[in-house]
Structure formats: C-alpha cells, structure tokens
Image 1 (cartoon, rainbow, N blue to C red):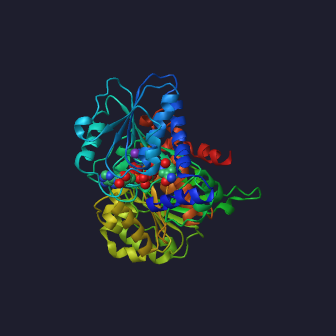
Image 2 (tube, rainbow, N blue to C red):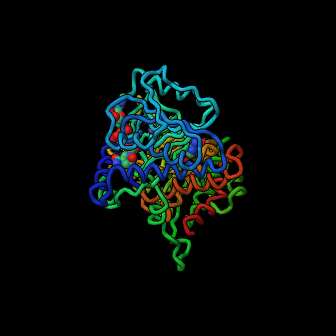
Image 3 (cartoon, protein in one colour):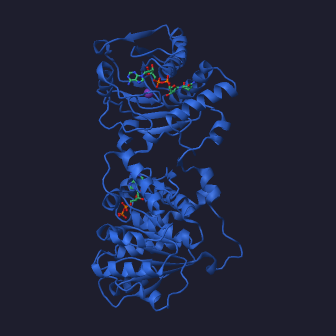
Length: 503
Ligand SMILES: NC(=O)C1=CN([C@@H]2O[C@H](COP(=O)(O)OP(=O)(O)OC[C@H]3O[C@@H](n4cnc5c(N)ncnc54)[C@H](O)[C@@H]3O)[C@@H](O)[C@H]2O)[C@@H](O)CC1
Ligand SMILES: Nc1ncnc2c1ncn2[C@@H]1O[C@H](COP(=O)(O)OP(=O)(O)O)[C@@H](O)[C@H]1O
Ligand SMILES: [K+]
C-alpha cells in the first residue's frame, strides 16, 4: 500500500474530481459519510453527546457534514466553526446546512461541555502548512484539556500534526482515534506522533484507483495483498535440501536463550537445515532445548571466537545464509572472528544485536559487510551505528541514506518497523503490539529472517514477509493478554501467522 505525501493526496483528490468525475462537495459528503458510519457503529445505542470542532478548510467541511449526519441520526450534536483562516467553498456550502453551527473567534468562546461525550476534531487536516500558533494553538490545548472527560476522534489527521514533516513541540490534538482517509500519512507511522493519533483507522473514500496505481512513492505499508504476492507456497516435491541450510552464530555464557529462540525461529520459518555455532557451555542446552538444530561447538566454554574456522579450512558445508549476533557478546576475540568471517562470506547475511554492537565498536569493519546484507537494529543500536537524529523524520532520512550509502537492507524496529532498501524505498510493517516489547523478541525476528533467506527468498521479500509474520505471530499470541507475552510464544504462533496468509 502506497503512502502518499500531502501534495500527492491533493493531486489524488483533484484527479478523482476530474476523472470520476465527482464534485468536490460530493467527495466531501462521501468521505464524511464514511466517518459518520464508523462513528454511528461505534456509538450505537449510546446517548453520548457529540462536540464537533470545524476549521475553515475542507477538513472543517468534513466536520460540518459529520455534524449534520449525526444530528439526522438522532444524536445530540453541537458544532463550532473555529474562524481561523480562509473558508473553502465546500466548507461554506456545508455551513449553510448546519443551522445549529456556532462560532469561536477567540479562546474565550471555547464552550463548556456539560456532559462527557465525544469531541470530533475537524479543525485541520492535510492542508496544514505551518505550525499552529496564537489563539488557534490555544484552542488545541483547550481541546486536549478535555481528554479525561471526552473521547477525542480526529478526522483525517490530529489537528496540528503535519503529514510529512516533524511536528515536535507543536500544538497538536491528542486523539483516541484518528480516522484517516484513503492513505496512511507518514506522520501517523512515526513513534514521536503515536500519542497524537491514538489508534488509526484507515477509511477508504473511493479516490480514483488510476491515480494510486500510477503515482510514484518511496514509502509503502505492507498489506495482505503484498504478503500474498511475496509468499511462496511450498513445493509438493520438496525435500529438506530445497529449503536451504542456515548457519546461526548465537549465544554465549548466560545468553544461550537468545540462541535457542533464534534457532527455533529459523526452523519454524521453514528452513530445511540449521547448524548453530555455539560456545561449549551451550552444547547440552541447545541439544536438549532444540534437537532439530545441528551444533557446531567452540573449544571455548564462554563465547564464540572461531566461527570463521570451517570457512578458512574449507570445511564449511554449503550454507545458504548466515545469521549472526543474538547473545554473542562483543569480546574482541568474537569481533576478530567476525572480521575474518566477513573475509570468507559474501552471501546472504543477517546481522543483529551484538553483531551490530561490534560494528559500532569497530566501525572499520563496516566496509567488509557485503552489499545486500540485512541489519536489524532497534533504535538504540541504530543510534550507536549511525548517530543520533533530531526527530523521527530526520531518523527516517538517516535510515534511507545509510541503506543507500552501504547498499544494505536496514530494518529499524518499532511499532511500525521501517525497512529501508538500497534503492531508498521504505516499507513499514503494520503488525505487532506492545506485548512484543519483551526480552528475546528481536532474537526471534533474526531467526525468522535467516530462515526465510535460507529458503531462497530475496532480502527484500524476506524482510517484508519476515517482519509481517513476526508481528502477526505476536498479535495472535497476545490476543489474551499482551503483558504475558514472552518471546517463545512468538515462535509458537508462527504456524498460525502462516495460516493467515493461506486463508
Ligand atoms: N476534495 C477534497 O479535496 C477532499 C478533502 N478532504 C478533506 O480536506 C482536508 C484538506 O483540506 P484543505 O486543503 O482545505 O486543508 P485543511 O482543512 O486541512 O486546512 C486548510 C485551512 O487551514 C488554514 N491553515 C493552514 N495552516 C494553518 C495554520 N498554521 N494556522 C491557521 N490556519 C491554517 C488554511 O488557510 C485553510 O483555511 C483533508 O484533510 C480532508 O479532511 C475530504 O473532504 C475528502 C475530499
Ligand atoms: N509496541 C510495539 N509494537 C509492535 N512491535 C513491537 C513493539 N515493541 C517491540 N516490538 C517488536 O519486538 C521486537 C523487539 O526487538 P528487540 O528490541 O531487538 O528485542 P530483544 O533485544 O529483546 O530481542 C522488534 O521486532 C519490534 O519491532
Ligand atoms: K483534524
């Protein structure tokens, strides 16, 4: 699913108006009716009053239509026009159809909302061109002061939030829900804005599909259509060699759990064969906890420092992929082995956790990491590797720049994990939940990605599918309670996540 910028969304509106054809007024009616339907379903049977704040532009126009439709459906509705700018023609036309409309010209006009109800924020949408200031910013703060008593629903965007630029420090509505039209906006996917948008509901409003098909964008959100395109069903005549042989370098004394979690995920993701390189202390642990994996054991008891040796001595099996990092530590001897391994291996590679920490400790190793490798940093690891950014838009720009510079695939973990490709395109993953903020869930992701690469998925397909499966398995595992989710549950639910694709 493409993510469009505010100017592209305006073009999509204009294209639809010209080519459907449909009048702007009717398109507004259609968008607002879709919102009103959602609201009517959510508050069916409730007697909560609605307090609707409308701005001067087309976002305000949507609010006016919603006010009329909710009133027609028997709800108690009050609506205010916040007279803060040039009134758009479609807004003006709809003002005439809301006889109970009142005006706010100054903060002192802000109403007292007697009963707990629902605030509809239709002040500003994608047309916002600069931060809100003056008395209008004051109105935003007054709306936010109502958060305890009133449920706030933002139309298209929380007012004050810019679609394509950072809004750090700006006055923005804090919504419980954001009903956004047709396309995701970049701002809604970045963590620093999560608190403003609340839960985002994507609402199709019938913009012209020809525009969406043709428009070029660097940003995408994974959807089911994409997953079904990427996913490759298993060949009925397959044998275990068909799905590749992965080498996983993971674990050290006290951190063998990371190795076990990642190893299980490699195989649950569907790899044919797995060899795990572990220190001696992990041998019984791995063989007992996960007999499906073959073990290659170090002479060292505590950590691994010779995983390059089979390659150097030309004794290594024909691996299809190497996954390295979970729990290996950053001992200089491990870093040296990593450096030597990079001298022998130019194939598919997944780098996570301590492999990334080794790179940030010894950045001279970076040029040795093969092009098209996958790196999976969490935000702290990302900062250690590439430096800090002023805000999350800057961080996204840095992510894209580094993926292009090094020709790597870089997956930056988060609520909407962002995966940057060497061509600068970015795919956001929608699945997952806060229950997955638990020790070891990243190790499971490393395993899944390694398992997919082993089977012959290319790096981009492995990322899109792997992040989706990881989050979906987490969602299914957290269905009862996100608090109790532990990383091995994600592995246990991978089969159910695959089953969702096959439905
Ligand atoms: N035909 C269309 O174009 C459709 C547009 N839709 C709605 O229209 C919205 C976009 O409408 P607009 O382009 O009119 O923009 P908005 O309604 O988002 O905002 C524009 C208005 O805000 C004022 N404004 C902008 N920045 C300001 C600032 N910093 N301080 C004070 N005032 C400021 C402008 O002068 C203008 O009056 C979308 O978010 C969506 O809600 C929907 O009705 C669907 C159809
Ligand atoms: N709030 C959240 N919503 C969605 N996914 C999340 C959330 N919190 C964490 N995750 C996912 O869980 C994983 C955590 O990985 P990481 O921080 O490396 O964990 P660990 O180091 O403990 O293995 C990432 O894939 C991340 O995207
Ligand atoms: K709004």
